[in-house]
Amino acid sequence: MKRFSGKHILIIVENLPLPFDRRVWQEANTLKEEGAMVSIICPKMKGYTKPYECLNDIHIYRHPLPVEANSAKGYLLEYGIALFWEFVLAWKIYFKNRFQVIQGCNPPDLIFTVALFFKLLGVKYVFDHHDINPELYIAKYNKRGFFYNLMLLFEKLTFKTANYSISTNESYKKIAIERGKMTENKVFIVRSGPKLDRLKIAKGNGRYKKGKNFLIGYVGVIGRQEGIDLLLESIKYIVDSRDDVQFAIVGGGTEVEKLKLLCLSLGVGNHVTFYGRVDDEMLIDILNTADVCVNPDKPTDMNNLSTMNKIMEYMALKKPIVQYDLKEGRFSAQDASLYAHYDTKDFAEKILWLLDRPDERKRMGELGYSRVFNELSWEHESKKLISFYEMVLNGK
Image (cartoon, rainbow, N blue to C red; front, side, top):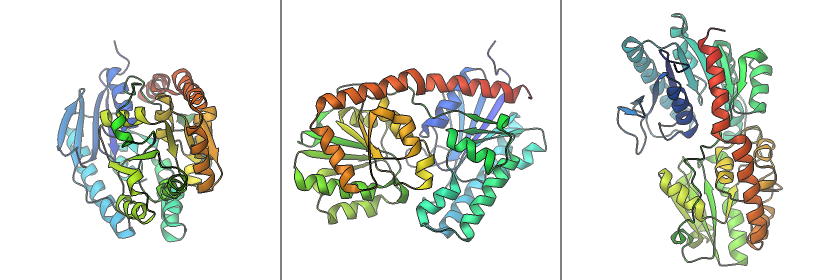
């Protein structure tokens, strides 16, 4: 008999649709494979517009959401609509088939308001801590003030409501204990390890190089804090010194159009392709083609303390990495990456250094793959999630 047979777990995600959110999709499938019924509430977004869909025996309920916000009023509207639909759909699901656990995946730290009502009925609330929102606010707006203090309050109330918290790394666990006042035995680390059967190593496709000798790859969200503006400055430096390098930027976000204009103003438009959000097949094809992959995340508190999925996806495909020197980025990649000072010229020179050294690229790629295969892949992390839910569902 499977561990979680007869149990029903509701997962709520506000900022990404499923199955696009890879971490949550891996969690959901792991729980389903252990016998649990899994339902998910998430927003509708491009490519994921069906209000209900059953994939891999996982029930996905999608709700309307306005355009991605980039202002205080916009966030108020976005989060208000999301919470309304999360509340409505959660009751709909509960009356259809009662669930024992709600797992809320931030951002934002507001899903606890939905969970509060169900806790009165004996439902447990698990907080899956994806982003540290107070630090994210500073990274986006470079200030504190009223909204920063509001983020701290929502975070505090989230931890107070949660029966348990899942942290993606040691830094987040420390925040849950010290700032969230959770007891250590209620906080568990489950990293966002890549699933190796999804990330298949292949030759790649030369068409992404656009006739150039080399391809540099980036995948991730494209917002203010991700440092794509810094990457474009580094690209300018590289293009001014050689003409044989192409750059592929994969992902969507609120800053895409601004960055396309910056790209043109820097005169590097012929060397950069913005692919937007793409399906897994195209994403993996682009990354397999890349000679070097980059993570230009700015050295903010948010980025310093966060584990970025892109790093381990690069490693799973045996790609050498260049990134700024950040605590959790260094923990993940170790010797599979070069670490630049907070300087776009230094970042560019480290890319150029790797392009001229194919043996070093290969060595770093092998080191990264070995680390993922032996320590960080979802095969390892899924076991931690199962042990965690055994405790949650057994009433400890």
